[in-house]
Length: 288
Image (cartoon, rainbow, N blue to C red; front, side):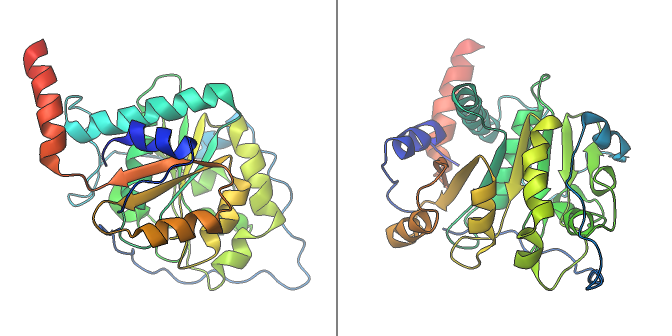
């Protein structure tokens, strides 16, 4: 991820970065599909979440998978950490200007770094003592966040929306961090239909009661309608592109599919390491 501050600022002014897709995290292990609700069953009631609801979440150790590329929370001088702190600062500033608590992170196509961005942004936000952060895996088609944190996939989002578990039971609290993870949950045949329910809309409305930030990883915009739907429910959307891979045409199509509504900005992923390391190495070597 590179030049995050400038990319977001240009996006706010209506500009788009030159080009950018590809860096993918593969899907997780499939789980048995959850049974559908009976035709005559009463749909789940309004979420009506309260802060106490997250107290039921089991606590799990922070043990990221070796290939996860998660931030090293013990190494504050690491270059990727600085970049995500820049993004965090920018979003926190926007939060002071407008109601902003739920953020969809998506990309035009697969393998552009959306999951990488969503997970590390959530980690960066959770490092602030005043924040309580939710990281939700809303990519029900190819979920991967449970693999990155090495936690169970179910119960999770799909189980909660289908009425098969309580909200707190669908969460995992990461030990030592102000971070809660909601994995995708049990596999479903109809992700879009499950997300397009009154219960899902109520969830988005109620999440600010419990969390300072709720950050969601979603499917790519140009490959399914899920992210477009979720973008209409969230307070804002962050679009991730990859330098040297994402075409300008795909960025334009992605922005048009969002109707440029609630687009907070664009994160440019995949900058050359030399461009970043020279900047931070110079600063810290001088400071020391």
